[in-house]
Image (tube, rainbow, N blue to C red; front, side, top):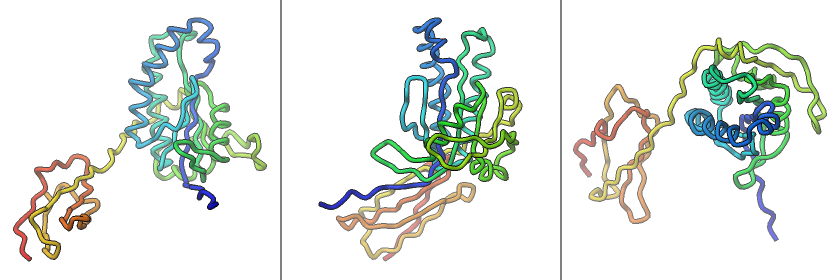
Length: 251
């Protein structure tokens, strides 16, 4: 019997949970759950999606999120923590929901919708080292973002991680430092368009132009199994179908 091939990929991993969640649930379980659900719906989940992240799993008060870009992972987490500071401004200290966040980057094993391996364990450990409302990242993450984001994380020294032989260098931001960060706008993903040209024979040459202010990121001209040509474009997010012009075509 052939063994199933293991899928691996490099990913930025965000582990996040609510600081003092058990205490909050003990004070008012219903109000805490409703508040957490509102934060997820109105801030956390939309911010993750805007930065092209994927929520791998939820564990009550916790989230495990995968990003293809470490820059997106850090920018999204900072945006969430800034947003939570604003949402908590008028909430009594003892009733506030504050997230702790840890970010790591590493090779992960993919099984269905879940991910495993050391990169996940390190992110979870970094989360526990984070202050409420803060962020902790590994040295690898810091090295990836240092020239790409205007963030200066504080060196918190080396820390041990369960089942990891080597110590992990940790860098962090507290809530006050995050509040002072410049806002980073998420870049929307390209728009994928497919244009069918059923009247064109497979050997026909097709020319097209795009409005100059809206650059094409990717283009591809293919034939379907039925022989009908298909023009596939990946465009800047603000571009609309009306800006695509297919001029005269000749065999």
